[in-house]
Amino acid sequence: MNRSFPFRERSGVAAIGLLLVGLSSSFAHAQQTQDTNFRMEGDKPIQIESDQLEVFDQENTAIFTGNVVVVQGPTQMRSNFMKVFYSDKKEQPSQGEAKPASTTGQNSSDIDRIEVGGKVYVNSGTQTATGDEGSFDMRANVLRLTGKEVVLSDGGNVLTGCALTVQTETGKARLEACGGNRVRMVISPDSE
Image (cartoon, rainbow, N blue to C red; front, side):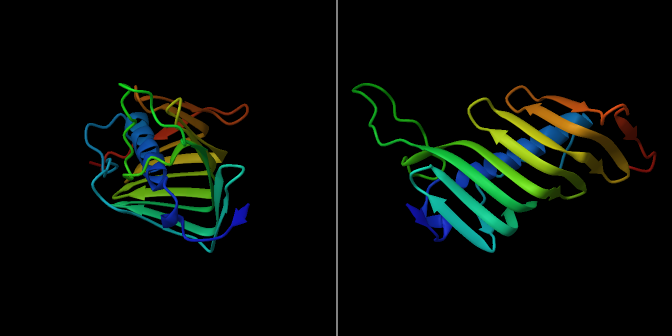
């Protein structure tokens, strides 16, 4: 069944927050800074706006299209589209088995992965990450931001490559070069 209605009527808003956490974590570790403006804001509401939202119940997907903007605390993500893949959790845990915690207070679905595309932009304070496409595998806790050019910047400090992969649980990040080029890093002596 194909339905269009506000996303707040579906559980899974927390997935957007996890995407932001993944991006923020990746930037913090890629830059290897002691302090970062990208922070988990689990106690802050998440606001999502787009020109359209379609929810496909049978495919377990929700697609936001056109001028997608996600804001949580000081962190903002913009893209042309965002697709959320979720799995229904209709079965109850067996006796003695703990119920999984849900950050939305609802247990009707779990997010498997999120894909964003059409120029992805994430900003928090002085830090910015941009690319053409991004994905966050919620099960494996792996974030990937790719594009013709992936740029991570903090003030005058800039990292450039074509693919950023982050294991969000460990903080291990890898920035890959474009084609035959190399990863570039510019460090500004005036940056704090």
